[in-house]
Length: 277
Image 1 (cartoon, rainbow, N blue to C red):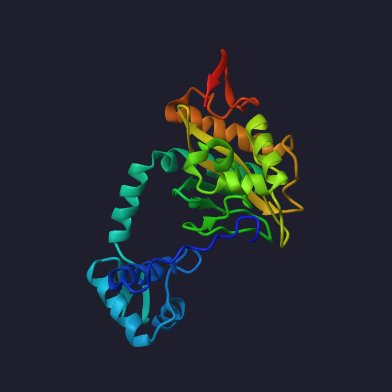
Image 2: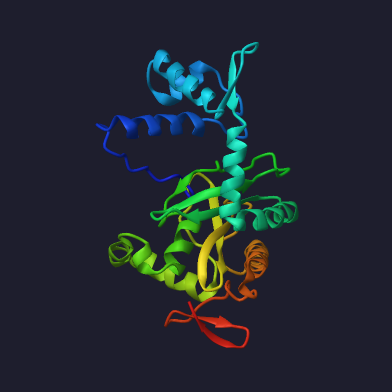
């Protein structure tokens, strides 16, 4: 999906055996999705790009750590119970996921489109929750863990607009090289929504920021087709998205003001006047 297509992961030094081991284990675990919760050794071998013997060695180690389970009767692997512990720990460290979850499900029921939540990993936006249980014949699914383009995706542009520039490596150079990106970031700061990102393959996304206090901590997006998700900041979907993002911001203790747009000097409005980002 080009609009929210995962950006390439920077490879670590392949000469380090320890790093290679971690990377391969991550590849195996990331192969499992909600749509494909059970995989064969052949499927994991294909994902890993190694020999079957190597893949088996890694799956054995992951099983011993309770990160994988193996059904001997069917010959299929699935994620192990330790994943639930790690998931609970991750959610506890990022309360926005637990708070946003019910709101996202409600929004899906309201608009019948996929709704996605992303956080910043220091380099780009990463999907931490996706709700796509829509009734549409054609629907767009986004995999949890996907790393999104920070300048081509709606969520990435939200982070570019509201994070301190120093927190987005290379952003100043990218803005200097693209007048379109500069104008769009300025517009996102004014309107509080990213609604005009490039679309390809019939996919379009719109995104809104979620704050805790004055700090941007997440971006929520609606992802659908160019037919079902209109352009512009004042469409019914854009208005619904901003409303839900504002509710999550308020529940995080930001008083419901963190989602408001900023002026040309980088000031964000508050209910009683002007505030600082």
